Image (cartoon, rainbow over all chains, first blue to last red; front, side, top):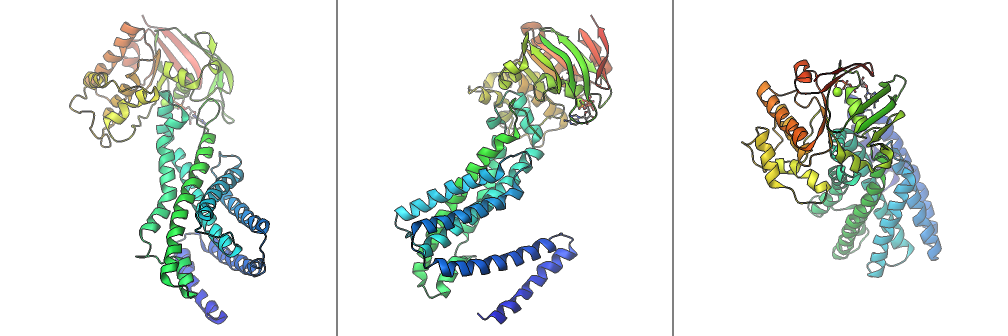
Length: 249
Length: 217
Ligand SMILES: Nc1ncnc2c1ncn2[C@@H]1O[C@H](COP(=O)(O)OP(=O)(O)OP(=O)(O)O)[C@@H](O)[C@H]1O
Ligand SMILES: [Mg+2]
């Protein structure tokens, strides 16, 4: 693909911008900023990766993963419910645990090699999916507690502990966060030929090998999003209550 | 015995309750009346420890609320909210919840007895509650609160959506526990007749203060 074709392809953005403007979705600014950010970030990363792919030391690889983790955690801050303190640290903790578990299993089973050109792209995928799941989780947790305050309070007034009083809300929130990953797994190959697999095929990898890789990715995304949302939700829901187990909102 | 000592509740600039003192003895029956927005529900929510006063203290049997576990307190002083909210899908989901809290098996016989006493015997435990009428919701919410009889039952306009006949059925059943088990009842109502019919004392709340206190019988 040439640079000119890429620039011409950017005309695709005109459609969402017009829709957003006409429907007063108020997304135009957000969209333009996010596209510009994506371009700049990818360019920088492209240069860094070219340089880093030469690197062999495990420490450098781990450091890079950690930088990705920090960035992902920073990106969840906007979605952290108002009453929840230390959102960044909760997210970082959830991301670190889910990524380490998933990546360790992949490496131990031999599905992945501890090489920079495997670890970095794959952990990037894990972390970004876990981050999106955490964000969905936060948004729905706040919504559930606000909209269903009366139900929770009715359960509290019967003498239920916070966990039981908000069990339905926690379950719904967890489901909502993981369902997108499950749904996309269902349609793999039928609707979506995922980015990585397509990339591998375009780059000349035999389809069967690319598919094996994709199946592994599906397993790892399911596990990572589930672990990450569970940790983030279970730590943060408690902060909707004070010491007397009263709702703060 | 429930005691509120110099209670104020002022979450923002304007006080909702101010310097309120109130003692309610074990097994006493008290009705509360007063204009909308005067702070009646807030008072009952305070008594159930669902909110804490910004000033002053509450006591149960001479011990400060903060020395009780919140759950233990709310099972003793049990608040039935003004807007009934049902849980889950079926009647069973609702009547079994108090047992779930206590990690016990749901007393099906008691549930069926209460359904009959509250004139809901046409339904069984598997009935879906999503289409329940306002009055049916109110009755099921009270049943839920009575699966285990507390020491004090705080009712917030609990029969506001009921006709005369059903209202009296509910009153009878609730006051039965007063006579048989010494249940204390504190009941907010806008129905002046109801407020004198069965209670021994009536409080009037106006602008966050007790403006009148009458002994009825
Ligand atoms: N947490 C809170 N923060 C701010 N204002 C509150 C809070 N809780 C209650 N209020 C306000 O306090 C006032 C009293 O509310 P409350 O529900 O106690 O009234 P009420 O006497 O039960 O009225 P009604 O008869 O209409 O049920 C209302 O104006 C309400 O908006
Ligand atoms: Mg009220």
